[in-house]
Length: 262
Image 1 (cartoon, rainbow, N blue to C red):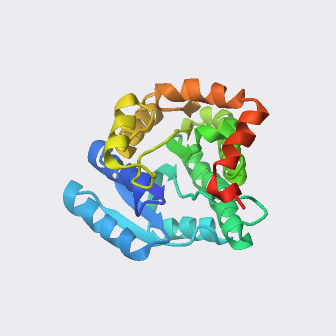
Image 2: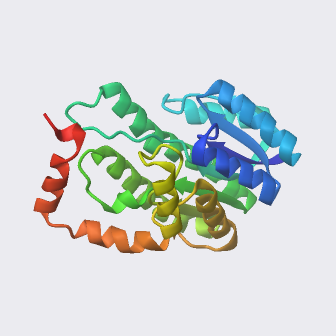
């Protein structure tokens, strides 16, 4: 069987950066998974042409209940040995819970918790049997925070963090490294800042580029046995500050957010 790295959310952003870095720096064949068919296909071809590794793309909606089983079955049928699993697929909802649509909320819960858990169970079992493997789950520094407007994002990322830490203990003796990555602000082009200000935030270390984030996360995944990686020194300062803000500060901030006006 051929050894592959499986990356979810691989058609763009951080997921695509993981796929490219694993191919370029670690010479893995790549299975790219996403629900963006054309972007996924184009990314697979580009990685193959640029880094001379085998690439496969699988367009699937990870919010569907049987998605993890279908991905696993595909790998079995293609005789792929998944040695690295990167669970990056996700989404952010910034909206009061009372007004968010049920479909959007269901999608996020499925992506962040259900699909991730089942992929870890299925592929982790095979890794343990082989005595080797790497699982990286993307959490967030907001896993430690209770922030209005992203209440379910916070909660699901907290699940990813605590699930991964517990799973680390289960898999350690089998030679499988499980890592939770808890990044802060990442410049994926979606931040509401101008180029100059975004560049200033990167220089100050407040916002991290996807390339820098992925480089640090993979270095920890392959070079250590740590349970968690939180790239960026500022995050170790920001998290406890936000956690100890008095309620009146949070309420004052909410008044300035468009989603809580009206």
